[in-house]
Length: 317
Image 1 (cartoon, rainbow, N blue to C red):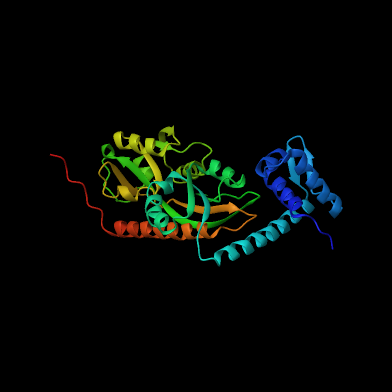
Image 2 (cartoon, helix red, strand yellow):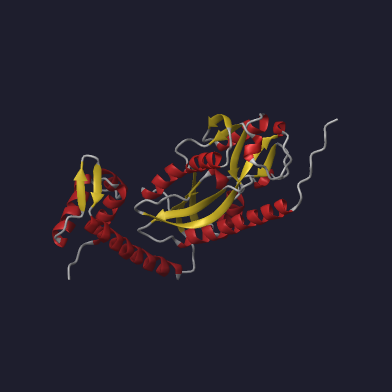
């Protein structure tokens, strides 16, 4: 039986996920030469080449990718055993680093924290707000324990599960004159002046596909990865934007912003991503339980609001 030290296995995992000896060393708080030596020692022991080294980076060979998957499962099992042992103490303590998009920090985060923080005072919580690409990189770099992002094709080193499927809404200011909560066809409102996420945002690509498929004409586009700025700008002008219903639940009264469901519906799946090599901690699972309960509550609020007939606006005198 061949015994390979755990530090060598972790080095192989880090290189496979980071695609670079340099980035793997940074993640593992090691030197590049040390990571390289661990990988080389593992290759010698196994008698097989695990990585192809090129000027553009490092990619696993078929044998390397298969070995990586087995190693991730094994290391994850060890970490799960540790989590189970700690869970028997009955206390919830430790660090918890979470990444959230503005979609979830505006309406979901505060009530979640209102319950979670006093219930688990020994958890050292750190929340980072950002957009999907940056949050994904932070999870891969082990800077975050988990993040919530739009569903994507996946990356080596991550595992994900569906958190929520949410309906997108048209958001406009009073100047547009739309009836709050009345379904709208975007093609009928064309041409639109619309604020969209940046070109590298997954939601931007989904919007563009929807526009092309449903004949929505766009007169002007303003690219903005600044949620508060987007909402303030839309509320003061005749520009519009499209956002998930979760972020706009507090705008249902329609004082400054008017919310309209889009017909045919446009939906977005959001997932929880975490490092593939280790399980979620107990504090992370408890946070997600409360977080998902709040999302379910918000969706119930929307179901009630959309079930009621939209009231036509009174003509101005």
